[in-house]
Length: 390
Image 1 (cartoon, rainbow, N blue to C red):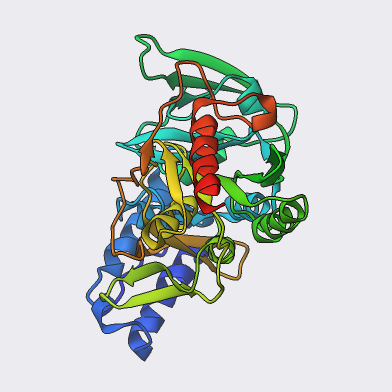
Image 2: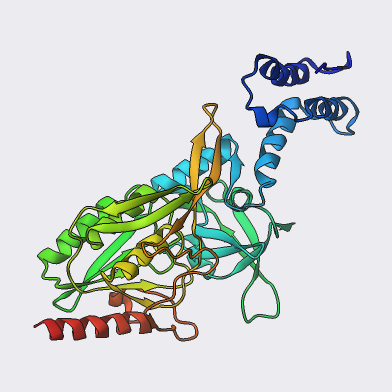
């Protein structure tokens, strides 16, 4: 198929377009792509470069093309990550970045706060799990992707960002200005509750999650723990490999999660350890999402522990991060996951074994900061189990 290019077409545009056609000519493009109208693409690029009112560059337009390709999927969790966004994501996974300290997801077209991170500007600014962010610095973000929203909210340390919030039960929107700071996320806190119950709070599955949970379990056992509370409230998930490693500390030999791919093939990730083999309660709420739902669902299905709290967020999709080797990446939903019993929890969440709601205005907290109703319920369950086993 011939290409007709105007002499006015810029060299950069010509190079980009002719590259597509060289691929077509030499047959290295998959058959299903060879019918695509690259000539139309060339014409539109030419019109933008020569007639659009404001000056732009072919490179900037191509960035928009890449983003549009992923946006066309209608999946809020798939996105093209430019160099800045990719760096931000890697920093976030490492546990240190600059921002306000909040985890977000998309629910019903709205950017929704999964959880603020303890001790960060977001928590100090009063943001709550379930808040919907409708504007950032006056810009409407209803319907945008999660990654676009992250890019707008994050920024240099010491700079302010103004969020417009819709909160359940409020008739009016709330305006909140928060000053960004360096956020260092230590994902694990732990302590003893009385003489025999170990409490572990895991706030995110970043690169330090597995090692820190392992250390916490060992330390608490050394202090005399004979039962455990694993607190996954307000935990938005993150890294699947860390999730699987953490799950093995609690779940006996058997499946942890099934992942189902586009062609219907299923892969099962299993525990090869004896698990905790002690009384266990897992605390969950609407901020428990993604990887933390995998752990909670596996514990529930394997009956390795009892879930206490409220229904979880309901994110049952798995993303792969694909490095494009030029400083950019694609985050692509490549599978969905099912619990060991085959449950698809996406948009549904996981129901607790024992429903316990917090009182109005009550937030999850460490036992040493005062027992909330869900922690009290967990202690009651474990005391009963320990008494029955004595």
